Length: 288
Ligand code: SAM
View (cartoon, rainbow, N blue to C red):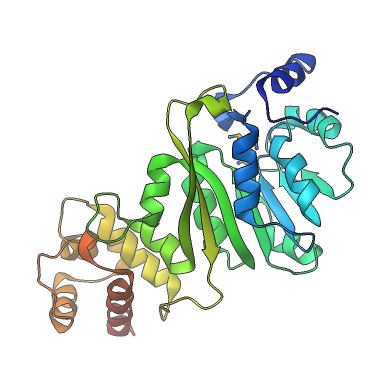
């Protein structure tokens, strides 16, 4: 089987199987070998690693991963790609393809079946569900060493910025609570088939063994963060007091802000992760 990663062999395989690319599954296949090299290198894969690939498509990146890793588990939702993957990955005995929706996949079971080692996640993600996929990976508490993924440029920016930026929000805080984000490379639209309407970026999230800050209750911290950014142009106190699910009243919120030396009209986008964690711990104590 010819190596993929270029326009000609990608078109050939699509024609051979009369495969209809599906927009609803975010199918933009990589046709640039240099970008593939950069992704695989940034993921730092060795023979000791078990790699989880999300959305292998026709197997372009899977072939590369299989050459570097001990094992690869590739989860693809589109059943029409399964016969194609059987052909493009026929030469590799260390790849398992699962025809599943990654949001319903038992990732913990995959890690367990493959020796319990922390997984390395590598993917050219389907853009329509990037945030839910990243959040479920990080919040699952499955042992994951790193997540090296292609995402829309704006989403990569949101993951890595700090307070004061217009892009700073719930996603930045959640990602930075669990991992250290680093941009690997920008990727022009011409590197995909078909070309997406957006710019793309590869980002690597290196998961912390010990998080730099630790909330008393992580689920509560993220509920507080989401509520703080729910009404973007409103103050943090309004967001928290109006979030019915939290069960907090304005008086309680303002008391805690005053204890922390913060003004009543402060906005969520100015608070660091450390301050959010302190805020959430103090609000939690009020409910105890
Ligand atoms: N890895 C291939 C590449 O780089 O050429 C394909 C990347 S394409 C951007 C995204 C892939 O994710 C497609 O193959 C699509 O069918 C698959 N996909 C979309 N939604 C998915 C889901 N919920 N679970 C698993 N795979 C999904």
